[in-house]
Image (cartoon, rainbow, N blue to C red; front, side, top):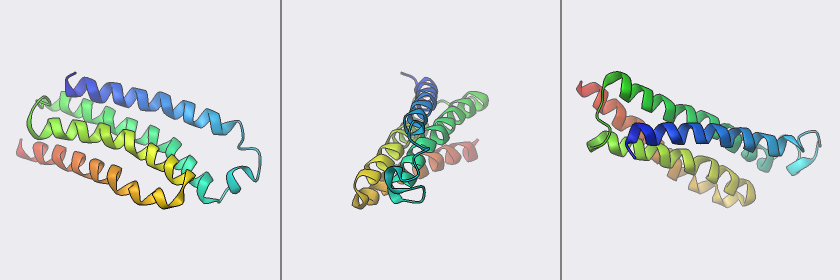
Length: 131
């Protein structure tokens, strides 16, 4: 699958998952003590996982649109890495949020999606600067 298509599919899939990830906890949000209360670690991580689907889905859509607008070849070189790192970060961030909600020590895994996303955007910006 070509990278712009990969990022478009990842972006829209992530947005769909964001709706689902919001609907499920939405069934219980009215319970004040659900997942330990509004300010609890678990509830904050579940909310962060839900919003990460949307935010990172939009980032993947923006990558695809940017590459198309600028005519950047995304099937090789740094942009191929950028595309795949953004998809990996998009998948890993919500997963780590939910894992950290389940077991707080797993919060140390946040380095994985953050590294993917920083490198992905950095490589994209490097290629844009070369133009």
